[in-house]
Image (cartoon, rainbow, N blue to C red):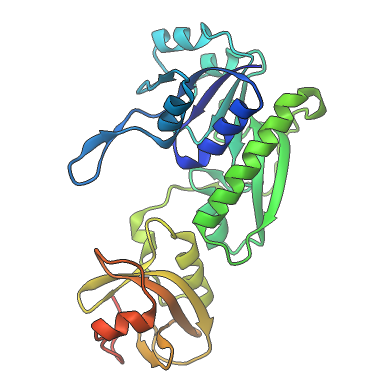
Amino acid sequence: MRIVFMGTPPFAVPTLDALHAAGHDIVAVYSQPPRPAGRGKALKSSAVHARANALGIPVRTPVRLRDADAQAAFAALDADAAVVAAYGLILPPPVLAAPRLGCLNVHASLLPRWRGAAPIQRAILAGDAETGVGIMQMDAGLDTGPVRHEGRTAIARNTAGELTDELARMGARLMIEVLADPDRHPPRPQPEQGVTHAAKIAKTEARIDTTNTAEQAERQVRAFNPAPGAFVEVAGERLKILAADCASGNAAPGTLVERNDGFAIACADALLVPRLVQRPGRAAMTPAELLRGFGLPFGTSVG
């Protein structure tokens, strides 16, 4: 097929690679414009932009698609389908209608649950047992279009980073299956019940809330790994918790508790036991490694 690909972060790269490997004619890639990054704030292209360059595919980086000229340029590509994966721009109706088969989106949730910007993190935070990917026929709503194909996986103890990688691979495979035989995967309207919205993650949500249960705190750790990183304030430092378990124990919520295997943080019902932590500007380390060079004020509360 003649394909326009639209994506920006690493999550979208496996789908781009799968389209290329399957022999589709990718006539253009659309991605978010380069952004300032790093200490020098030099402009950096997105992961999709960089991958498209490596594959020799022309890249377009419009700031928006609402202008008539941008819409005409998109329509002039005469695509059979637009494949969208975490692109980051709203597609106006003229863009949605331009390809012969419309725009197909790789969405990382089991729709209609978790429509919106952060479905993977929200599924973990909510304690969902499973998640998945839907290949959605896009319409003008927020992830409201009918679903053509779906895959599922257990969340278990996975982090957001681990699930993102798994769902990216799953979405790539499902998209190739839909494009290989669209008639075998007709669009099915989403159920009217069970709609939830996955709001964008605010950095303030990453502070571990010790007034919640230890299980809820452990979900924060997994949901915000790798970014923005769940944290507590200890001795004037922001200490990221990258991995943790739960254990029984009683202390006032927020109290730092000394343990033979490191330390714990008391929550409303039990203890959150860090297994991997990170100080600002340092590499990740075990709690035992942390304690060899950083004295924790046991018996006091974290911030």
